[in-house]
Image (cartoon, rainbow over all chains, first blue to last red; front, side, top):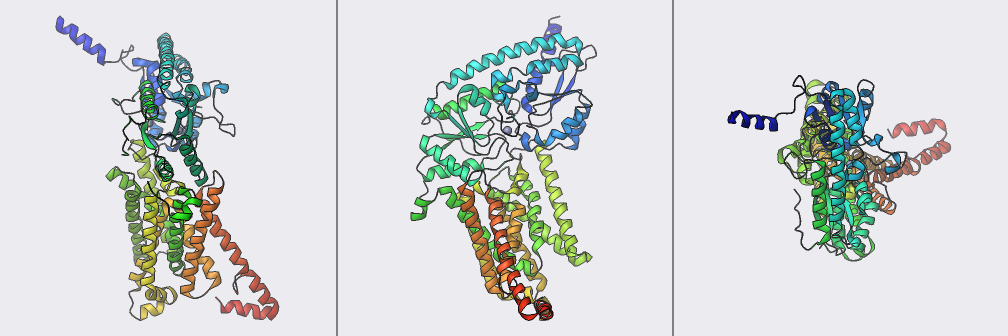
Length: 310
Length: 307
Ligand SMILES: [Zn+2]
């Protein structure tokens, strides 16, 4: 009897809560790891979620493979970040949307909360503003509920819980960043993935490369950045997990030539989360890990050891 | 950390100076090697080499797990030389036309590279994101170490051309004689092709695949407008490449969001446009004047002479 109970407990920990047939109620394919995390938070164990792009992948330059096309074709629901984050998947996704439900999270947000980047386009990196991201779960819950009416109430409830968690996260991030003196609250990264983060938490954000990793920084931009780093005495710049950091090395050298030592403040999660088990395997953990890295490098630069480039 | 050489350092931002040195070196050496390439009608070899680097670059990352410039370039050089060897082999064995063989090697190797990188990206190989942008080049991100590497290889390539000048002249201008005299023409050709490959690979980070091809082709064509003799042509092509590099870097550092590589090539193309018009004898103006002086028949004869 006892054995049976233990087995029951272990089983309930490890097995997904089954639907009537023991099958996932909805098979979802998400484009990025960030999006997949959101869907998982809302859907819980009733659904199966796959992410097209693995950890550490740059979504701006990601091209679909034939295998991806198969996975998308088998999915009952596709969730994408939208706002042209998945630049090379855009046509595939829009073709798909005529045949099955495709949720574009960014497009579900009120336009006045988005940051315009010219030509009627908006910055797609919406996830590191916890308050803004907390508006996305409802759209996912609604889409899941439509496909699985029996679970609709469950999805709505989980979405509400997750929204509350994100609100809590929002305050937590704000409190922790307060440790950085205002003058040094400048986040310099390889590409502009943190503008929503900067707006939400009052950090000046500068991407060397622009909003998409597809554009190139000119020499004039590089010189201007060196000037800024030197004049504001910025102690650290940050490497992103999914983007090449050659720009930052050049920037570091330029500042060093002017007598300003700039450290590599560490790796930030930007367009992709970390592998399962890492300190950034969910959005909540990735955002907190980023904040820890930023605070450590900017609040008290003497304390932080230089993070060696891999 | 890195003191700048005197006056220049005081006048120019550090990064501008680094990039100018790297790009000027590449421009100069590309012009010199390109001259031989263009004379041997091997201009498009550069294009094939550039696109063939992608496979090697991807493999280098896959094997070493590193994304440093030297590692990627070594891989790129390996696959570029392999592809060009294949090119020479195809021509020798199958009697495929030059341009067709070049096109085959270019498209197959480029396709292979893209497939490989897509596969790596899909499997989340660290650092593989946007690896194909390696082919686009990124001059503004050059570091002093990168510029040093580019400069060293450029000097070595120019030295190699200088040492083999006699052989190169013969093969470039009179391949039939060279063959008759028992010169290993195929061997010299192979060396030449390999030099072009080296130059292209080294130029990639500064200018990118399409643009480095332009740097191998345009300065020699400009030089050809002004002279018929090899040594002045080599010097002139090197000079045009170098000047395009320096001017292009200066222009792109003067205003924001101007990528350096394309600007450099536009400057070179500007030189070409100017010499097309004003070059002595070959220029449009000179021909037009000559045509007026001698009358139509003589004009035709004259252009015939200069074929
Ligand atoms: Zn991004």
